[in-house]
Amino acid sequence: MFSERDTQGPVSRRGSIEVVCGSMFSGKTEELIRRMKRAQFAKQKVEIFKPSIDVRYSVEDVVSHDHNTIQSTPVDSSGNILLLTADIDVVGIDEAQFFDAGIVDVCLELASRGIRVIVAGLDMDYKGVPFGPMPALMAVADDVYKTHAICVHCGDLAYVSHRLVASEKRVLLGETDSYEPLCRACYAKALAREAQSAAEANHSSNI
Ligand SMILES: [Zn+2]
Image (cartoon, rainbow, N blue to C red):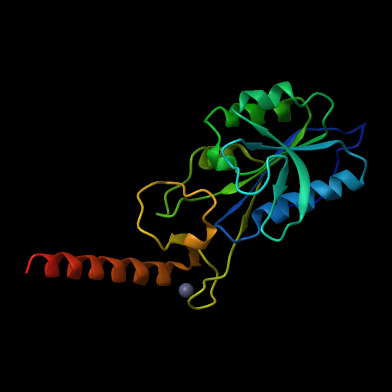
């Protein structure tokens, strides 16, 4: 269970890796920002990094959907994070699913330097497949915290971000309207409905 015990003072500074992950609309970026602001309030030096692919709102801020912001630095590759973290106590990494596989070693290296690392990202893509480096990050983390959206069909806890538009691309950047959080049961029903309508469309085009 995640513990908010902070032993990051100058005497007992020790590194750690925390992963906050879940579907879209689950509040994972808000949780990252909450932890970062809490550390910032305690006069710890904090910095957030995100992949430069995530250009939805602003180049310089991590902006969650409710516009609760904290300054951040976009980086092209995970290796750049190591170059930019001298004298930082707490490193935040947002949208970690978009980083290259090297992000895992970067987090381990930061933790070995005594830095507290807080990683936020999508656990799965719209098909329910584990996303990029997230499974490996969860494996090496000290703590993993899953955030959940609410299923828009039944109000249960959501499991996956179901895509509402037909596209095989893994990422539709900037198109949050194209997804809905669904629980397992409603996701299965949605897939069955889609298969049915695809079959019907196929059938009518063959007549
Ligand atoms: Zn549901």
